Image (cartoon, rainbow, N blue to C red; front, side, top):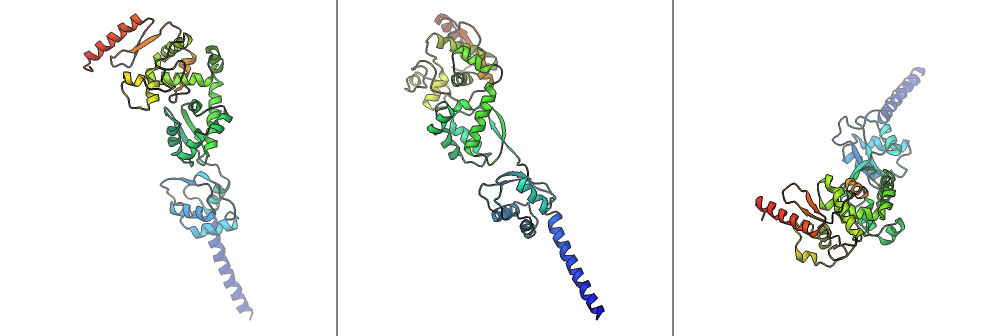
Length: 343
């Protein structure tokens, strides 16, 4: 009798041991493959547990979804709201380690690279490629008059928020999160190198400095002459002379592929056309590099009022204090073009 009882106990113990070991395996043994083609998973906002499990399995992060579900139940993970964001998954993780990371682990940031975008829609398109928010949602925010007014901007000046750089942020950032971050980075930029006091000495706001810098940005690819060009335009502003900046005409017409501004373009009626309207345009005509912003703030002091491309293929300009000198530079420009077979 006792032998039979002992045998039954032994069998039950073996079964319990096998079951216990199986559950130990489910919890602690690797369930993430040893090699991952892409270690990053993006969990969209609003994803539930079933959606997360399907996402993990379909993208190759789980060897077995059944054990993952069981462990998630034991850890009360399946009953919680799933965190959105981008997470880096390490090869060979157990179900337990994977769940711990998805529940409370650090998100992996994405990189938002902003360089020389021209329009808010360009910003929206570029940013939407690396964060969860789509381009229309971002653009709607960047053109929302009431929202921008609350932040001290208008749809015309909003481009002055963006300082070219590479920024790390979370993938699930909302359009508001993105813009708030850009404002903080803008404030940080202006707080350095006495930039605010330099702008005040010029009699310009930060947004006006940025607007002028965007014109300088589009006038030349040569960083060394940016302070000279900035000084020239500031001379014109100080003397109530029309800026007559070709890049503003290009922006006004929207013909961004325009290689040469013609007389008919100069007649285009737009507040951005500085051949027709005095002073600065209503806002930036593109993003401006830091070198262009600092070129305005550290303008070169001179008496130049006119400038003309040299036409020698270097991308540099010739400057003049008078119309007579400007006419000489124009003649040299045409001569250089002819010598290069461009006319």
